Length: 104
Ligand code: SF4
Ligand code: F3S
Image (cartoon, rainbow, N blue to C red; front, side, top):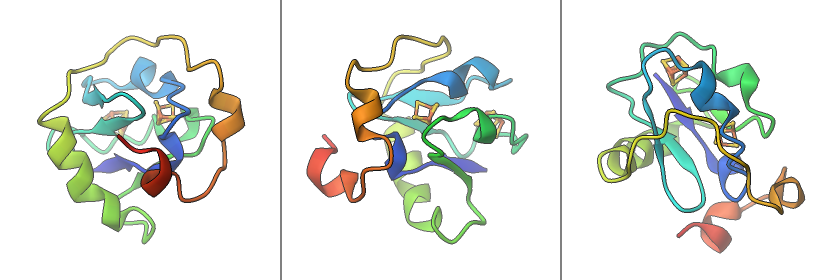
């Protein structure tokens, strides 16, 4: 599957949900996650994310996010429509170490 990684935090552009054929994105306050058991590995969401937050789980940088995506996808509500990004989303694009500072 594909997973959402740290770069989504506080950006949450939601372009990804528009293209997912199986609607497997789930929404938290500051980021989205993918349900890894529902993702069919089509890959169409990856290039849609302006923050480059989506990676295949085969990417070394995605490994640590797989269980996090699985855990929160089970707890958060589904999101299948694009919505407005946070007003300050662009200011957080590319910021490092967002998880420990901003995840909630
Ligand atoms: Fe959805 Fe395809 Fe992205 Fe998986 S890879 S989350 S199925 S768009
Ligand atoms: Fe997040 Fe990128 Fe989607 S910032 S909400 S993974 S388009």
